[in-house]
Image (cartoon, rainbow, N blue to C red; front, side, top):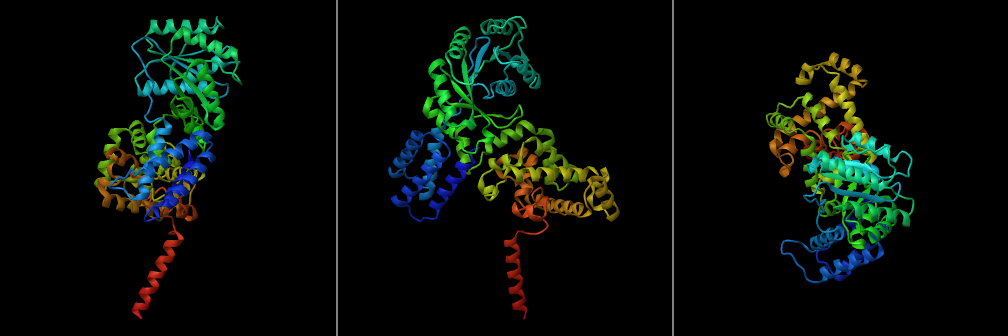
Length: 500
């Protein structure tokens, strides 16, 4: 998400870094580029104009930080204004002591309300220790209530059912009574949508709101509809008063105009963003972290949370001890590839790391798929080894390599390539010890040490790609990247001349 805006802003701000001293002309040129970048990202015109004026006022207002260079000051101002544009601080769902707390999910038909209902219930159960009950009051769309039951089963959350009534108010009253009697502290209501905003829909929502007195009314919008999503949110807010927005399909929206505009236009924050089809692909919306991602500063906090939530602490500690004592085996390497798969796509993980750590390296979705495919091939090769071979790679001779290649559907060259990369990785780990990823912490270093850390360091899995793809990523493929090879040739030439 925000790829288009991120690329343009980073390019504009990078151009400023080449200036020893910033003049008003430099700032004006940069602000013009920023304004165009915002408009091209489908940000509301007035919001874009206000953003640029706020940056200009601060840049010209002599707000100087002693430790920052002139261009860094502008980056700091742009970052602060982006955070402000997104809403300033993260807005968690607000719950009270009443039972149950009601959360209404509203929006147009096709925006992803039912799936979002399931995702939010799962997130609340896992992250805020809530006990949700789901209910669908969409009595108009065929099989809508059955769909919520399927979603509820998929996320392991309870769904209230009433096969007798088709009245939305009767359904919510029954669900509230059931929640009170059985100890559910949160009732999430999946309401009916329409293809357009109409009075019948709004009147029904007003009645449900009056009956249930919800603590949150969340408007679900498809991020890819851009400013249409903002206009719809504005209409719903005028009629029923929403408390926050859930933007779906953010992973497919390279522009991000809706997310950038909503808070300023309707005054209500984005609370969640959907970033994939899986039921755990939903994230709380953190303005500061999103601003950091857009400006290439990474999102290390979210990455740490991701690691802590999906990597077993005991296993991670064991991996750390093996890494630091140089006892890291091929079996451990295979386990780390499995851990990395739990964290999601490589392109997503790379975006969470600061550019200083990645050297500006990023992966497209296609490249990410290539890396993940190669990781699968690597696992297949290791799986074709015996336990003894995985624990002591030095015993793998020519005949064993042939057997491993045949068993994994690969070639002897690929087996050799994997063993070379593994040896390089062991050497690098022994040298770097416990400081591989700096301040990200022991658990994260262990979880990612054999994966992202090595990819960035020129080892696996980037290096395992070999050939041209590995060169594209800057990894340690079978051949070094072209620039490095040319530099090496020049050095050898100079040495030969000296000898003569």
